[in-house]
Length: 293
Ligand SMILES: [Zn+2]
Image (cartoon, rainbow, N blue to C red; front, side, top):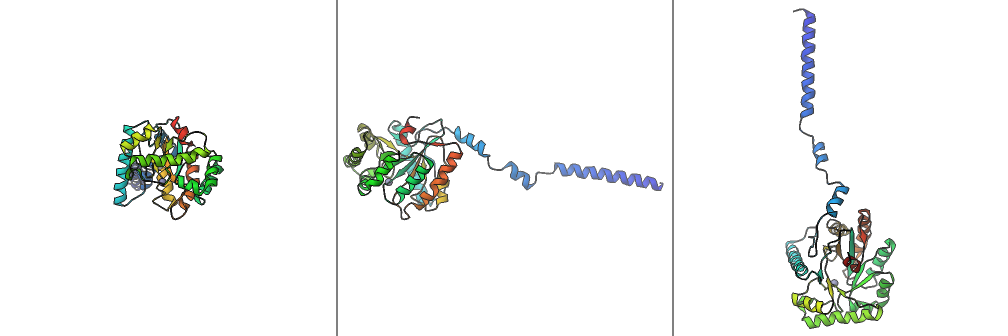
């Protein structure tokens, strides 16, 4: 073979090898980077769409998204079952949330008024021009009447959280009803229309108690989202518990008094929760407004 033929043969083999190499390179499995790209979290708009069309009815209560110890897991699981059962059996009297098609949520604050956390929460709500519902305790209205009046003058809704923060399921029905009425008598002095929305301390009543409350014309408001601000002092966990669970028609449980840190974590979490929900297209309503949805 002539030398030129060797050159042509070598060039041909090299070319074929080169094209085979390119071909194999292009059909190799995706790199980690490619996999990461395909499995990336659902885009915000897609998530938004999924949440918007998630069908949620009264009786739904979201499981908190933070890790809890086994005892607390079981306790809260029992709570969700019992609250959900009340809502299903008495759908016009006990509410965990509403089946809203609009992106609306109701922020609710229990246990106030006090003179430490409640004024700061009012400042934040007023700054964002957002209405909320405060389930107030009668004893605390007596201690902090000016803060109570400030809640009303800021345009927020008032709900009844009993006079002395009794645990209904440990209380005879008549005493429980009297305790809610005692709180309502205080509210009547300041608010012209009768308050019909109550939140039982700790969230539950018995079925017999619920029937009695219904006969008295009360509507009982639970929650579908527990911010867990009574459990954790970590503002990021509070934010996660609310934002991970959000859905149209949510009733969100938070606290505006009590706790050994004067609700610092709640106060720190609140602006981030409000801003994120606003960004996601949610608007804020009172319980009364939510019930009309
Ligand atoms: Zn309470």
